[in-house]
Amino acid sequence: MRRYKATIAYDGTGFSGWQFQTNALAVQQTVEQVLEDIEGAPVRVYGSSRTDAGVHAEGFCAHFDLSKPIPPANLVRAVNARLPDSVRFVRASYAPAGFDARLSAKGKEYRYQVYCGAVMPPSMAPYWTHCAKPLDIAAMREAAAHFVGRHDFVSFAANPDRELETTVRTVFSVDVAKSGRRLVMKIRGDGFLYKQVRSMAGFLLAVGLGREAPGAVKELLDAALPRTARVETAPAKGLHLAKVFYRSRGEK
Image (tube, rainbow, N blue to C red; front, side, top):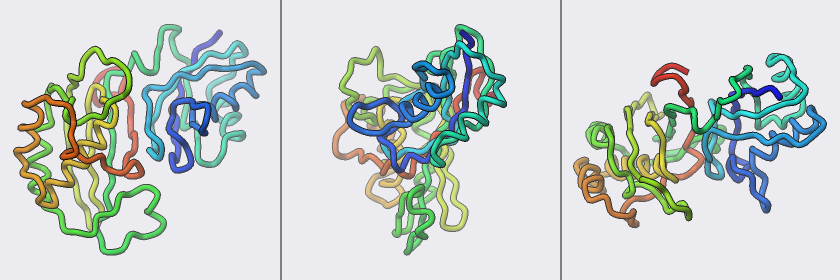
Protein backbone atom coordinates (compact mmCIF):
# COMPACT_ATOMS: atom_id res chain seq x y z
CA MET A 1 0.00 0.00 0.00
CA ARG A 2 1.20 3.52 -0.80
CA ARG A 3 -0.01 6.52 1.18
CA TYR A 4 -0.99 9.76 -0.55
CA LYS A 5 -1.63 13.28 0.67
CA ALA A 6 -4.07 15.31 -1.44
CA THR A 7 -5.08 18.96 -1.34
CA ILE A 8 -8.74 19.25 -2.30
CA ALA A 9 -10.87 22.25 -3.27
CA TYR A 10 -14.64 22.12 -3.29
CA ASP A 11 -17.74 24.23 -3.62
CA GLY A 12 -19.74 23.16 -0.58
CA THR A 13 -23.09 24.51 -1.82
CA GLY A 14 -24.52 21.14 -2.82
CA PHE A 15 -22.88 19.04 -0.11
CA SER A 16 -23.73 18.16 3.48
CA GLY A 17 -20.13 18.90 4.45
CA TRP A 18 -16.99 16.79 4.21
CA GLN A 19 -17.95 13.95 6.57
CA PHE A 20 -19.68 10.86 5.15
CA GLN A 21 -23.42 10.71 5.84
CA THR A 22 -25.94 8.00 5.09
CA ASN A 23 -28.83 10.35 4.29
CA ALA A 24 -27.06 13.13 2.34
CA LEU A 25 -24.26 13.64 -0.15
CA ALA A 26 -20.90 14.56 1.38
CA VAL A 27 -17.58 15.42 -0.25
CA GLN A 28 -15.87 12.45 1.40
CA GLN A 29 -18.08 9.82 -0.24
CA THR A 30 -17.85 11.62 -3.59
CA VAL A 31 -14.04 11.36 -3.51
CA GLU A 32 -14.11 7.79 -2.21
CA GLN A 33 -16.37 6.65 -5.04
CA VAL A 34 -13.95 8.04 -7.62
CA LEU A 35 -10.90 6.46 -5.96
CA GLU A 36 -12.74 3.13 -5.72
CA ASP A 37 -13.30 3.29 -9.47
CA ILE A 38 -9.56 3.84 -10.02
CA GLU A 39 -8.38 1.31 -7.41
CA GLY A 40 -10.96 -1.36 -8.21
CA ALA A 41 -11.70 -1.72 -4.49
CA PRO A 42 -13.07 0.47 -1.67
CA VAL A 43 -10.75 3.30 -0.57
CA ARG A 44 -11.21 5.14 2.71
CA VAL A 45 -10.25 8.83 2.59
CA TYR A 46 -9.40 10.59 5.86
CA GLY A 47 -9.85 14.36 6.01
CA SER A 48 -7.96 17.03 7.93
CA SER A 49 -11.20 18.19 9.55
CA ARG A 50 -14.96 18.23 9.22
CA THR A 51 -16.68 21.09 7.46
CA ASP A 52 -20.35 21.99 7.83
CA ALA A 53 -22.93 21.82 5.07
CA GLY A 54 -22.43 24.72 2.68
CA VAL A 55 -18.85 25.50 3.77
CA HIS A 56 -16.27 25.74 0.99
CA ALA A 57 -12.60 24.78 0.78
CA GLU A 58 -9.60 25.72 -1.30
CA GLY A 59 -6.97 23.92 0.77
CA PHE A 60 -8.64 20.94 2.44
CA CYS A 61 -6.19 18.06 2.98
CA ALA A 62 -6.80 14.33 3.06
CA HIS A 63 -4.85 11.07 3.06
CA PHE A 64 -5.58 7.63 1.68
CA ASP A 65 -3.79 4.41 0.66
CA LEU A 66 -3.72 2.75 -2.74
CA SER A 67 -2.52 -0.79 -3.45
CA LYS A 68 -1.95 0.13 -7.10
CA PRO A 69 0.37 3.14 -6.81
CA ILE A 70 -0.07 5.84 -9.46
CA PRO A 71 2.34 8.78 -9.90
CA PRO A 72 0.75 11.76 -8.09
CA ALA A 73 0.44 13.94 -11.20
CA ASN A 74 -1.29 11.11 -13.07
CA LEU A 75 -3.55 10.48 -10.08
CA VAL A 76 -4.66 14.14 -10.02
CA ARG A 77 -5.59 13.97 -13.70
CA ALA A 78 -7.41 10.66 -13.32
CA VAL A 79 -9.39 11.78 -10.28
CA ASN A 80 -10.36 15.17 -11.73
CA ALA A 81 -11.56 13.52 -14.93
CA ARG A 82 -14.14 11.63 -12.83
CA LEU A 83 -15.08 14.14 -10.13
CA PRO A 84 -17.96 16.61 -10.52
CA ASP A 85 -16.94 20.18 -11.36
CA SER A 86 -17.63 21.21 -7.75
CA VAL A 87 -14.75 19.09 -6.40
CA ARG A 88 -11.11 19.13 -7.53
CA PHE A 89 -7.81 17.61 -6.50
CA VAL A 90 -5.49 20.64 -6.52
CA ARG A 91 -2.38 18.51 -6.03
CA ALA A 92 -1.28 15.18 -4.60
CA SER A 93 1.97 13.72 -3.32
CA TYR A 94 3.33 10.55 -1.77
CA ALA A 95 3.27 10.70 2.03
CA PRO A 96 5.06 8.76 4.78
CA ALA A 97 3.16 5.74 6.09
CA GLY A 98 2.58 7.51 9.41
CA PHE A 99 1.16 10.70 7.91
CA ASP A 100 -2.35 11.51 9.12
CA ALA A 101 -4.23 14.42 7.53
CA ARG A 102 -5.91 15.30 10.82
CA LEU A 103 -3.45 14.26 13.52
CA SER A 104 -0.35 15.55 11.70
CA ALA A 105 -1.83 19.01 11.13
CA LYS A 106 -0.19 21.88 13.02
CA GLY A 107 -2.78 24.51 12.18
CA LYS A 108 -5.49 25.75 9.85
CA GLU A 109 -6.42 28.99 8.16
CA TYR A 110 -10.05 29.90 7.56
CA ARG A 111 -11.38 32.85 5.61
CA TYR A 112 -14.80 34.37 6.26
CA GLN A 113 -16.15 36.55 3.45
CA VAL A 114 -18.75 39.30 3.77
CA TYR A 115 -20.12 41.47 0.95
CA CYS A 116 -20.92 44.94 2.29
CA GLY A 117 -23.26 46.54 -0.19
CA ALA A 118 -26.92 47.28 -0.75
CA VAL A 119 -27.32 44.55 -3.39
CA MET A 120 -25.43 41.26 -3.43
CA PRO A 121 -24.17 40.34 -6.95
CA PRO A 122 -25.77 36.98 -7.83
CA SER A 123 -22.43 35.44 -8.80
CA MET A 124 -21.12 36.08 -5.27
CA ALA A 125 -24.20 34.89 -3.42
CA PRO A 126 -23.08 31.25 -2.90
CA TYR A 127 -19.70 32.27 -1.43
CA TRP A 128 -20.24 35.52 0.48
CA THR A 129 -22.46 36.53 3.39
CA HIS A 130 -24.41 39.72 2.73
CA CYS A 131 -24.38 42.67 5.12
CA ALA A 132 -26.16 45.79 3.80
CA LYS A 133 -25.61 47.89 6.94
CA PRO A 134 -22.41 49.88 7.63
CA LEU A 135 -19.78 48.12 9.75
CA ASP A 136 -17.32 49.68 12.21
CA ILE A 137 -14.14 48.01 10.97
CA ALA A 138 -11.96 49.60 13.68
CA ALA A 139 -14.19 48.13 16.40
CA MET A 140 -14.08 44.72 14.71
CA ARG A 141 -10.28 44.81 14.65
CA GLU A 142 -10.16 45.78 18.32
CA ALA A 143 -12.47 42.88 19.16
CA ALA A 144 -10.52 40.45 16.95
CA ALA A 145 -7.31 41.11 18.91
CA HIS A 146 -8.92 39.59 22.02
CA PHE A 147 -9.29 36.24 20.26
CA VAL A 148 -5.53 35.88 19.71
CA GLY A 149 -3.77 33.56 22.16
CA ARG A 150 -4.59 30.39 24.04
CA HIS A 151 -8.12 30.48 25.49
CA ASP A 152 -11.06 28.31 26.43
CA PHE A 153 -13.36 28.89 23.43
CA VAL A 154 -16.40 27.08 24.83
CA SER A 155 -18.41 30.34 24.60
CA PHE A 156 -17.74 30.44 20.85
CA ALA A 157 -18.53 26.84 19.93
CA ALA A 158 -21.61 24.70 19.43
CA ASN A 159 -22.22 21.36 21.12
CA PRO A 160 -20.63 18.69 18.87
CA ASP A 161 -22.74 15.92 20.46
CA ARG A 162 -19.57 14.11 21.50
CA GLU A 163 -17.17 14.36 24.41
CA LEU A 164 -14.12 16.59 24.05
CA GLU A 165 -10.92 16.34 26.05
CA THR A 166 -10.66 20.13 26.15
CA THR A 167 -12.23 23.24 24.63
CA VAL A 168 -8.94 25.16 24.88
CA ARG A 169 -7.48 26.22 21.53
CA THR A 170 -4.78 28.62 20.33
CA VAL A 171 -5.63 31.31 17.79
CA PHE A 172 -2.48 32.58 16.07
CA SER A 173 -4.02 35.58 14.33
CA VAL A 174 -7.29 37.24 13.29
CA ASP A 175 -7.07 39.74 10.45
CA VAL A 176 -10.03 41.92 9.43
CA ALA A 177 -9.48 43.50 6.01
CA LYS A 178 -11.91 45.51 3.88
CA SER A 179 -11.38 46.43 0.23
CA GLY A 180 -14.25 48.25 -1.42
CA ARG A 181 -17.39 46.33 -0.55
CA ARG A 182 -15.52 43.12 0.30
CA LEU A 183 -14.71 42.28 3.89
CA VAL A 184 -12.53 39.27 4.68
CA MET A 185 -11.79 37.88 8.12
CA LYS A 186 -8.76 35.59 8.09
CA ILE A 187 -8.42 33.36 11.15
CA ARG A 188 -5.44 31.09 11.88
CA GLY A 189 -5.14 28.65 14.76
CA ASP A 190 -3.87 25.27 15.88
CA GLY A 191 -7.36 23.81 15.62
CA PHE A 192 -10.98 24.83 16.00
CA LEU A 193 -14.06 23.59 17.84
CA TYR A 194 -17.39 22.80 16.20
CA LYS A 195 -18.67 26.03 14.57
CA GLN A 196 -16.01 28.07 16.39
CA VAL A 197 -14.90 30.09 13.37
CA ARG A 198 -18.48 30.88 12.31
CA SER A 199 -19.26 31.92 15.90
CA MET A 200 -16.20 34.18 16.01
CA ALA A 201 -17.16 35.73 12.67
CA GLY A 202 -20.77 36.18 13.77
CA PHE A 203 -19.71 37.95 16.95
CA LEU A 204 -17.28 40.21 15.09
CA LEU A 205 -20.14 41.20 12.79
CA ALA A 206 -22.26 41.98 15.87
CA VAL A 207 -19.45 44.24 17.09
CA GLY A 208 -19.23 45.90 13.67
CA LEU A 209 -22.97 46.58 13.73
CA GLY A 210 -22.74 48.12 17.20
CA ARG A 211 -24.71 45.40 18.96
CA GLU A 212 -21.71 44.36 21.06
CA ALA A 213 -18.68 46.23 22.42
CA PRO A 214 -15.17 45.08 21.38
CA GLY A 215 -14.36 44.16 24.98
CA ALA A 216 -17.24 41.69 25.06
CA VAL A 217 -14.97 39.12 23.40
CA LYS A 218 -12.63 39.12 26.41
CA GLU A 219 -15.61 39.04 28.76
CA LEU A 220 -16.97 35.88 27.14
CA LEU A 221 -13.56 34.19 26.91
CA ASP A 222 -12.83 34.89 30.58
CA ALA A 223 -16.25 33.59 31.65
CA ALA A 224 -15.70 30.32 29.71
CA LEU A 225 -19.38 29.42 29.89
CA PRO A 226 -21.29 27.41 27.26
CA ARG A 227 -22.41 29.45 24.26
CA THR A 228 -25.73 31.27 24.45
CA ALA A 229 -27.95 32.98 21.86
CA ARG A 230 -25.81 36.08 22.38
CA VAL A 231 -23.17 34.49 20.11
CA GLU A 232 -24.73 34.00 16.68
CA THR A 233 -23.37 31.54 14.12
CA ALA A 234 -22.54 33.31 10.85
CA PRO A 235 -23.96 31.64 7.69
CA ALA A 236 -21.99 28.67 6.37
CA LYS A 237 -21.65 29.95 2.81
CA GLY A 238 -19.24 32.73 3.81
CA LEU A 239 -16.72 30.29 5.32
CA HIS A 240 -13.77 28.89 3.38
CA LEU A 241 -11.06 26.51 4.60
CA ALA A 242 -8.05 28.15 2.98
CA LYS A 243 -5.03 26.15 4.19
CA VAL A 244 -3.90 23.34 6.47
CA PHE A 245 -0.37 23.60 7.89
CA TYR A 246 1.76 20.55 8.57
CA ARG A 247 5.29 21.71 9.38
CA SER A 248 5.05 25.03 11.11
CA ARG A 249 2.77 28.01 11.00
CA GLY A 250 3.07 29.67 7.61
CA GLU A 251 4.76 26.65 6.00
CA LYS A 252 2.52 24.25 4.15
